Length: 456
Ligand SMILES: [Mg+2]
Image (cartoon, rainbow, N blue to C red; front, side, top):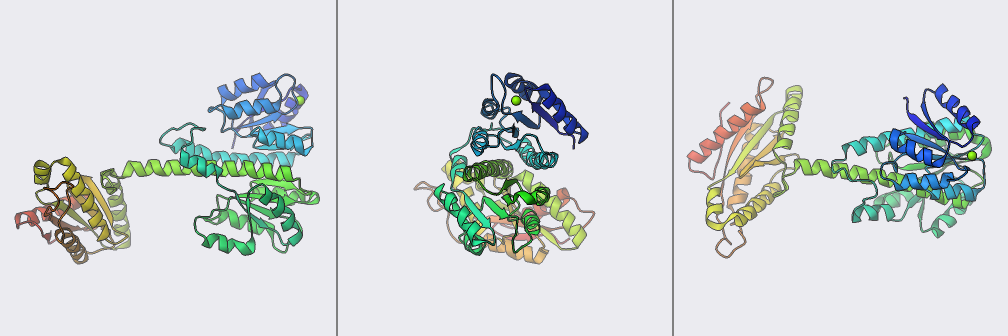
């Protein structure tokens, strides 16, 4: 992995030293010697990570960081502050300016490389999502829902075998408005449904469990994969922290622990994971919009074709049957002509609801267009598909439809349906659809309001 890293430092020797370290690990390095230059390079060269010196004449690192995070073009680039100051207040100031991490000079190689790896992993996730994000909404333009995602209370799970440690963490966290859970309360959290954990605080030293194993487990388990894991570690267990970072921990805090730093790191981690969550939702919604028919909420033709080819492939390989039912509303044109399109749309909507109420969860109901509907029935043979189609037909004919106006308040609606089954390897989507349509035509010409299938 050859990531581009921007190194910002006012002292030439520091820049050269950092450049040598990074290039030895095959990173490519960009350099800047002051704040304005750093902002310029960040905009023109799109580095993947910025290592930013705090103490610089003119514009200091805090201000550079604030400006980077305020600009939509650079806000997503992780910033690691490098500081000779080891005071907690300075670190907190950096995190408050939007820094993603910080390291104390002289920079320990191991700590540097583990942080870079963790940040590049984070980049990989967000870049993928940013690319797939259909709407192209810029960072910072959050909807109301998204803002409430960002601002909801933070749920922290404290994993530690020492009641003393737990208490020492719980008090300041709760004072900051976070909700704190311990392992014996975790099940209760799960059961309460919409509760989501944000951060796990994992004690590394002197525990009654194997913290590395737990860390790896949290990372590989689907339900907890997206969690931020912050490990707390004694000074003498630094290599344990390194291994935890390699296994996917998001951040490390050294004991003895400073409360302000803990709170600042939780804030940073939570902001990051919620940002990922928001991007994911945007991508999902974009995908959903592209496959759903807006009037009825059923799947559109594009999704129908994707699913058909998928299920045909599965059926060929696994030998399970596959059927489709083509459903068409009888004389639908008359509804539109006599009662208007609004009444027609109401009928289509209610029709969709009745179909959905009368199919199995695995059936895929599509509206490829107009008054045509197609139900894909996976793992279903012809006979079963015919009786399923018959159930739909009855559900439509059983009660009148409300077209929304007095004259159209009790419309008699019926459907005709044609059933086709998949014939194996040689069969194509077009052929199967043609057979379903032929069967549908047979049902129409036999007097409508009935189900037909073609003998294969
Ligand atoms: Mg300096």
